[in-house]
Length: 92
Image 1 (cartoon, rainbow, N blue to C red):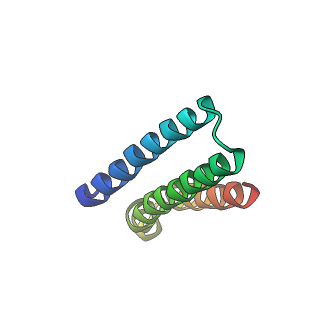
Image 2: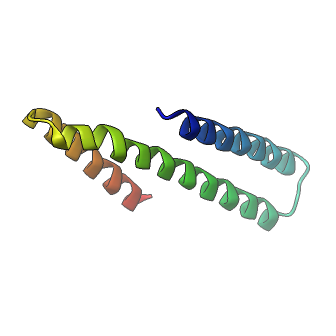
């Protein structure tokens, strides 16, 4: 993991964590439903950004290494993992 990228990911996750706690308070306090939904959408966007950062790092490290490798099993495993990730994201 690249240090700067790791720090960015962790910072974003801590922000999401705080945001989720805020949503929990909103629900507990009976805040207007649409306001809660809007905050949930903001958290989903933030998590999507984190997911993109992790995937980008994976593509530039693990996937690149596997593709350049002479190990056919390693290449196939990484390609299969990527397809599974993209399929899962398409179903979300």
